[in-house]
Length: 273
Image (cartoon, rainbow, N blue to C red; front, side):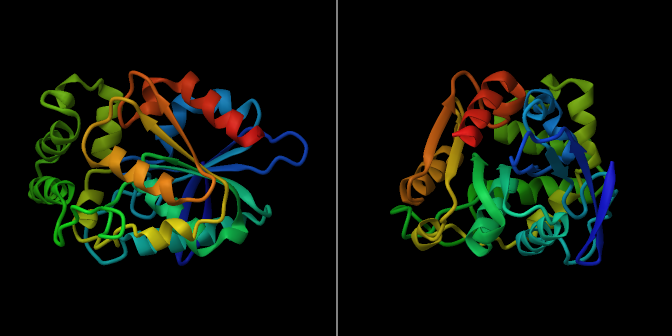
């Protein structure tokens, strides 16, 4: 593990592998309730061809945050990823994000296309506004309500109770109890970030946002993912010029953990194209 001092914060990151020739590094941005360790199942295949750099976002493990303050937000994390890439000083690179990390990477591409060569968004998290969703209703989404309920339980000190509430709502009843010990501990290590996410106020995606993306983009989805995530993926892909979609059979939202070989094959073919 290494650190880079970005916007007054020491961002921890993993730097693994070596790119062949002039191939740029691949920066991987994790989603909610996770950190750089979430990419462990795909590091082997990816690092045979690429230098892979996986940062932990502000307030995620290895920091143990108390949930206090206003420095947890999409806006702050976008600024941090931009600053992180600038500090790497490698020239345009490839950027991949999952879930909330996909939202962050989308906003980085929207603001700073000069920093990127290619963009990979694995079921980016977020909401659609009225220009992309004819059924749009102002106000908190069902996911935001689940996050708020879970965060309130976590803030009272019941970490496992809050995580069970969140995960069972996302993946179905019993999801928390079915998890092995190691991924459970990763979620516990990042549980208090849900308190920050409850206050996040992230902007919804618009048609203009999607049309502004200039970077060649690949969207990856789990074929069995339910809820709003597939709707967001398809709406964005339909409006990001020249983008591609790859769906992985038999997987849900954590598709790169459920089918790492299939996921890596898709990613490597896109990066090499």
